[in-house]
Image 1 (spheres, rainbow, N blue to C red):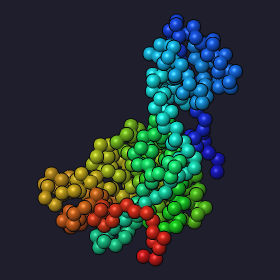
Image 2 (cartoon, one colour):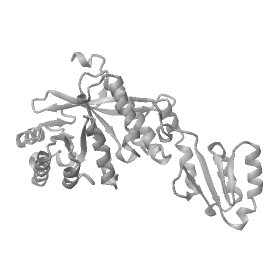
Image 3 (cartoon, one colour):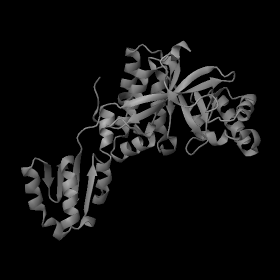
Image 4 (tube, rainbow, N blue to C red):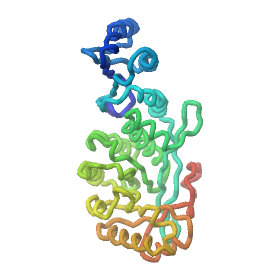
Length: 332
C-alpha cells in the first residue's frame, strides 16, 4: 500500500524566521555552525531551515543571546508561530514513536438492543508510551495535534481497529476524525483495502464520525461519507445535539446511525427539557432513515424511557464499561 507523506511521521524540518538587526548579526555564525554539524537544510535571506535535532540547542541559544520576540518558526506549511512555542513541539516528540510503533490496543464497549442483546461493539483506542505505561487518549490526540500528526494518528488507529475487528465476529463501530482527512480517495483507500484483504464483510463495519464540533467544511465531510457510502460501508454521527451535530447537519449527512449525546440521555426520565430534545432528535433520525442510538446510559429508568419512545440501540455503563477484548469473546 502506497502511503502519502501525511500517513506516517517523517522527520520534521523547522523553518525559522529571524528578524531584528541585533539578531541578524548572529545569523552568519549560526549558519556556519549548523552547516558544519549537518543540521542546516537550507537558508535564504533571514530564514533558516533546520533539522529537528538542532532545535532544542537553537532555542537555548536564542533565549540566552538573542531577542526571542523577533524570532518565529513554522513546520510543514503551518502558520508562523512565536519561537517559544517550539518547546511544546519538542515535548510531544514521543507521539511519533507511538504512531510508528503502533503502540495501540483497543477496549470495546457493548452497544445493545432494547432486549439488551449485543448488537455491536464500539472500539476505543488505548495507548502506551515507550516505557509501556498507559497514556490517556486525550493526551495522545493533543500531542498529535500539536505536532501536526493528527492524520497519521487517526490512520494508525483506523488501520489497527480494522485489523482487530477481524478477530471479532460482530459489528464494530470505529471512530475517525473527519478534520484529519485530506482526500477521501487517498486517505481512506487503504482502510477499505485492508478490510478487503482481511475478508471482513463491510456490513460489520460502522465508521463513527467524532469531533464534529471542529468541522468547518460540511461539504468536505459529505465527500468523506459519500466515499464510505458508495463502497457499501455504514457510518454513524456521534454526539448529536452537541456543538456542530445539529438536526440540520443530521439531515445533510444522513447517517446510518444517530448517537444522541449523553447530555440529553442522563436523567432524561425526569427532565422535561431533555425529553423534548430526545424526541426531537429521534424524529429527525427517523426522517433521514438513521437508526437512533442513545449513548451514556447509566440508569435503567433512562434506558426504559428512551426505549419506550422509540430509541432502538443503547450504550453506556449500564450495559458494560469499556474493557479489554476477552480471548473468548466470539464464544460468548
